[in-house]
Image 1 (cartoon, helix red, strand yellow):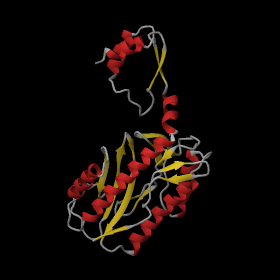
Image 2 (cartoon, helix red, strand yellow):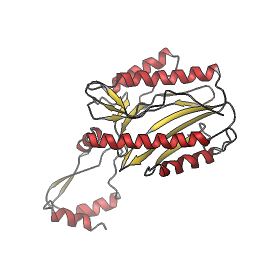
Image 3 (cartoon, one colour):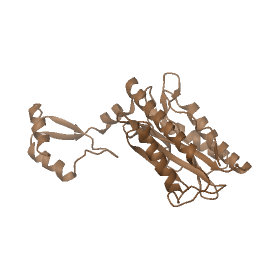
Image 4 (spheres, one colour):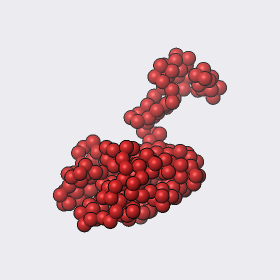
Length: 279
C-alpha cells in the first residue's frame, strides 16, 4: 500500500531528510509517477533527489558472493541449453525448441529468465531445415542474480562460408575478452572492436550501439559502447557480445559472462567458441 512508504520513512526519522532515489536512465522505482508525487505530498519537508550515480556504482561492482550467484546462474542456463540441444533436430518447429529451453531452465533450478530463440525476424514461426542457423540469447536467475548468454548452432553440416562467418564472430569476441581488465575504458573497448570489424570488412558500430554491458540483478551499467567512458574495476561483471549481420539478414552473435579481476578478467561461462552442429 502506497501509504506505507511515507509511514516507513517517518518511522526511520527521515521525514525531513534528503532521500536519494533511482531516477536515472533505465531505472525504475516500482511505483508510478503520480504515486511518487503523492509520496512527496505526504512528506513535504523531505527532499527527493536523483541518486542514480550512487546506485549505478553499487550495482556495477559486485561482491564475491554476488559473482558466485551470477556464475551459478550461468551454469544453470548452460545446463538447460545442453538439454535443449539433445532434443532439437531438423524438422522441429522453433516454438517447440523455445518450450524445451524454457522448461529446462526451471527443471535445472533456474528462477525465471529470458529467451530469444530462432532465425532473425522469424523466431517463433519456423520449422528448422538443413542450412538454417539457430541463434539464441538466453539466461536464467539464481537467488535474484542473472546470466546473459548467446550461442549459435547450424542445422546440417556447415559450409565453408558458415565456418568463416562463425570464425569471424568468435575472433571478435575473443579479442574483446582479452582486452577487458582493470583501468580499461569501455569506450576504448568499443573503438578497438570497431577497428577489428573494419579489418574484417564489416560495418562498424554507430554511436548508439554497444558490444556488451554490465549484468547482475538485471542489465546493469556500464555499456561497452562508444558513448560510455566508464573505467573498469575488479568486481564488475560484463557480457561482451559483438555482433554483425550476414547477407541473408541472419545475426551472427555470441556472448559470454566475465568478471573483471586485478589482472584481466575471468570467464563465468564457456562454450561460445564452439559452432554446434545439429542434425
